[in-house]
Image (cartoon, rainbow, N blue to C red; front, side, top):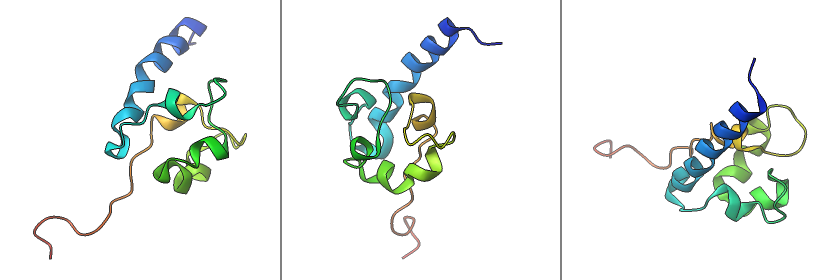
Length: 85
C-alpha cells in the first residue's frame, strides 16, 4: 500500500513531465491557477492537448485532472511521419 509520502514523491516527479508535453514548456503549476493541486476544465483549456483529451485523462471522472492523471498525457500525432509524404 502506498503511503502519503510515496504519493507526494510521485507528484513531485510527475509535475515536470508536463513541461515537455507537446513541447509547450508549460508546467502543471503554470496551468493550476488557483493552486489547488488539480486542473479544472477552464485551467486545462488553455493547453490545447489537455483540453482535447480532458475526458479521457480524467480517469476518476471527478471533473479535474491530477498530476497523476496528467502524467500519462501524450500529445496526439499531427501530420504525417517524416518520409511518408
